[in-house]
Image (cartoon, rainbow, N blue to C red; front, side, top):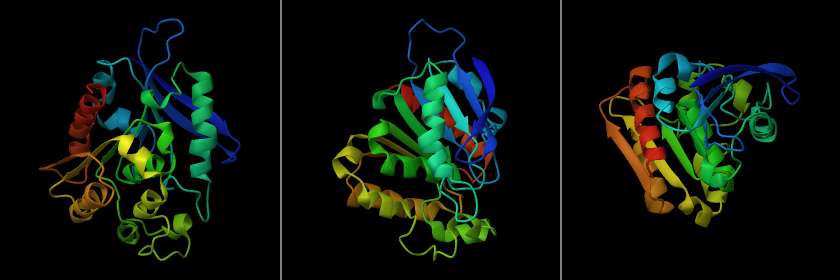
Length: 245
């Protein structure tokens, strides 16, 4: 596999941003690769998946491009006091990568995944840009924003003065605004460790997905905490689930 560390100038963020990319070593002329948009969690950046997991070796099994953007501490939103990361991701980064790299723009070949804050971002993309993807995988995702103040003292830079127990910016609200028929056509994967402090919230969110929205979700639980030991094991399971349809 080839690993690219790209520095890009973002007009929307008015800043230089980094994007990490994994590509197969051998490409066929004219080939358009399937692509996994892989989002990082709070306190990390786009390089964490390559540095902290076996992702590069795992990806070598498949003719798959993996793109790992830097989302800062944004929760992949247009921050109240910071960058417009949602607009950057959806209006700038994705079109730029499609112009630069031999990747497919077809929904069938586009997948989104992430851990923790990145799991929130992946689910948000699936709910708000449903027609762009065919599969979503959320690993230890933040599914209820009421937990955020306890883990992110500067959360108001992202969400402003919003009461995070309301529907504003909550995944359930995004889901209820989405096209249900399109949501039901996606493939869904959710995983959480039994020792993760967000396990009860994930259990509740999974019930919402399966009982209220009637989505077919592969829900993986078992031993694990909110850490890279768990996420390293899970990314292997995600790739297997994703590529062996």
